[in-house]
Image (cartoon, rainbow, N blue to C red; front, side, top):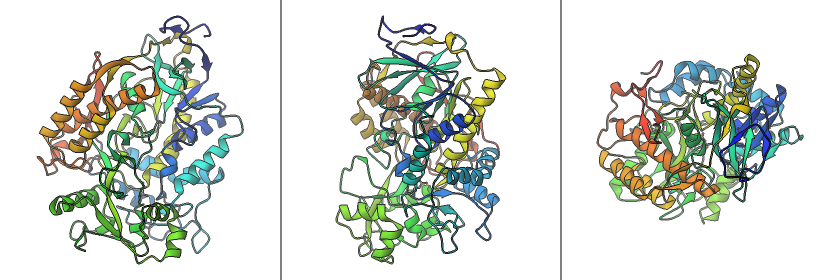
Length: 547
Ligand code: SIN
């Protein structure tokens, strides 16, 4: 490898080195948006992904982008902010929420300038739908229910002018750090497990979520909490990890579903579908003033309670008021998934049950993507900006990726100009870390059983013990080990926070503490001890504007 970086690898193991101003990890909406903005600002940017460039979570987003463009009578940015705060259960940061949502219209405008096409409405402007927790029709969508595919297509097309190099099939293992602890590059493994270093004064984590902590999830196989683990090991705190959002309507494909399960977008309810149980009773009757379009945490918890009382494992989404041509035009992805399991949704209610969908928490960042560690930035689902609080408002995540991706690139440019980032030559190339790795199947089983909707102290302790007993120290020498180690660390951090939060709020539902406790209107942050144990920060972060 090139000189300059002290290499902790055994002789010759660190085979290669590449340099950039900014290394972006991940090719979802936040990562690609940041990379494109960084190029516009004249930076040398390198994007690295452990999979193919289109292997991330963005393409699976169905519903759309929540944004106020000024053409819906009665809607306003303030109203969108109010809906976000209401859904967030008292834990959103009001300033961050106002900043991100206020930037939404410009961010969507830039995306359209980059070629994204949203479905037109009757007046020729973008069509709108509604999802849970929204008090207005404000969600723009593409390809009916294929918004993520269109967002990804547009961003990848804009990146393919050769000015945004992309390193596929390289997994990020750890950051390079200077003696002062600043981040100045990344240790990666190629597809054969050969280590290499990417040196840069700035690293942006845009690695997506952690749905693979659970047996059934809407997330693809890449959603293994990699960024959370890298940030923790780099010294950055994470927060709100106990708030894992379960999507209420995931297609039920039979007992024991595993891995990525097909989503049935909330927009189907936005177009009038209702949830019923096996007796034909409405599931959300009397639960919330917004009924079937209550915030997602409320609907998922209502389904879970109904299933427990009936001793069943799925309810039904009745969308039979939509005829087949409407389904084909408006929800082609949902239609195809239903038909694949023998359900014609225009004739038969769709069997659905909740599954892990979105991490409301993550690496603590400002709205500009800055973490507590100089040189380390995060954007998208991996980051906790304070927008989502205890329960994300539907379709706010693509919006957040667009806004914070842009702002993070601008923050890196500003920090470079100010000279506050480390000189990469000062960074040491770390040895491949040796850290606890639990068996993934065991981890997913206990997380699903004890750390989903409906937790208690005893169950959370079981998860902790199982992880303690099953985890074995392993060198992170392959992508699979990197992922399993990240899941292990993220599960431990999540369990620590969930066990401490002795109340129910948003997506965190404790059977032994069923009520909201005003004392807990604050976020919990977790850091790593020097010996690598996740530890809660005390005092917890107070949330500005918390209810
Ligand atoms: C959906 O379409 O229901 C999911 C959208 C989201 O998670 O925001």
